Image 1 (cartoon, rainbow, N blue to C red):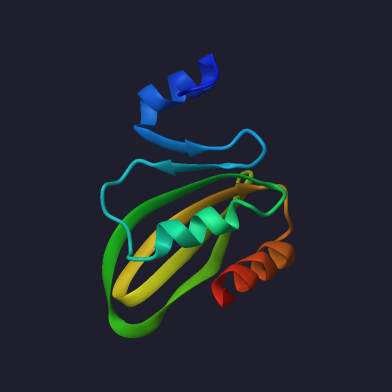
Image 2 (image 1 turned 30 degrees about the vertical axis):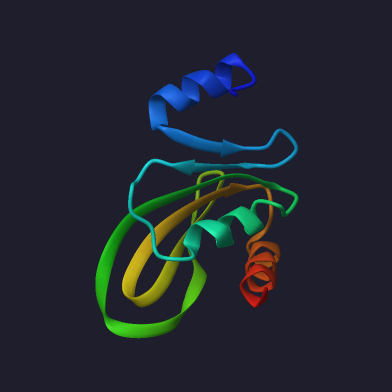
Length: 114
């Protein structure tokens, strides 16, 4: 059940939204994600200071990464762009947050270790 008008309008614009009023939200506007990425992002949303996480474009790369990795790429307005990698697949992840890059990298390391 969508709680307010902003959630309803966001749902109409982007498709699925996984939201919790006390935490940030995960926007799922693509049908394909790297295996294991969504549960990782859901755990990352539990960190204080993260407002929105949006997985983006998925693609292929030459090199192989056996384990799922999430690395901060560049700062964007209101947060950071990250790159998720597993196998020969790469996916952009946009994270809107008030956290500094160092604190966000630490939160990602904690979530990846679980």
